[in-house]
Length: 245
Image 1 (cartoon, rainbow, N blue to C red):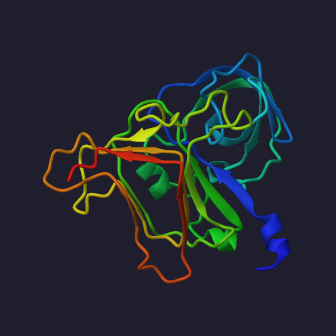
Image 2 (cartoon, one colour):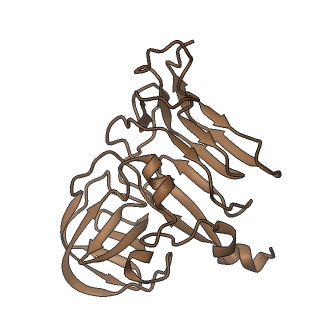
């Protein structure tokens, strides 16, 4: 693919967090993809969170302030995922996490209500699952079935910067200070995250294996490089602990 294709690449964001409650409720308006809230949003609201306007679903791509956010369209509206041509007058809206489990994000992001494809290369998409420190998440995930490329990768990470979220969701370097996966129902292979797609990045999360009491070690990242080459996996800024034997 040429430079023109890379330039057109669209970053897509769907948030992940255990909080299933309404994060914001109030009036808001939008002009060409700039969402303006009538009152301040909580610090924990940020990129990937789902903005509900009637039956329409939009997703935050940037936090400019506690009252202004950039948003993008989704398949739920019959629109083009990633499109920012969103305008509506002041009306009641709500904001939620897009997904309450990482495994649900992995399985549902390609559906007709979200990205409408699992082929990130053909779609010119780079897919992000920003993870929020709402509480420990009992989950494990296999990232598999997507068509990815060097510039069209999947990124699982914690938002840190003010243009992402009002307060960092990443650990401080100590265990149990940020977003963490803490599964207590391990699969047969005992890995919390299995990566089988070619281009995937995992950044700034915690994996806590302390709830598993079996005879095998548990709670890691398996980079399954049996996939067809080339493969580029980035794993950085994570804390992995209490993995047993």
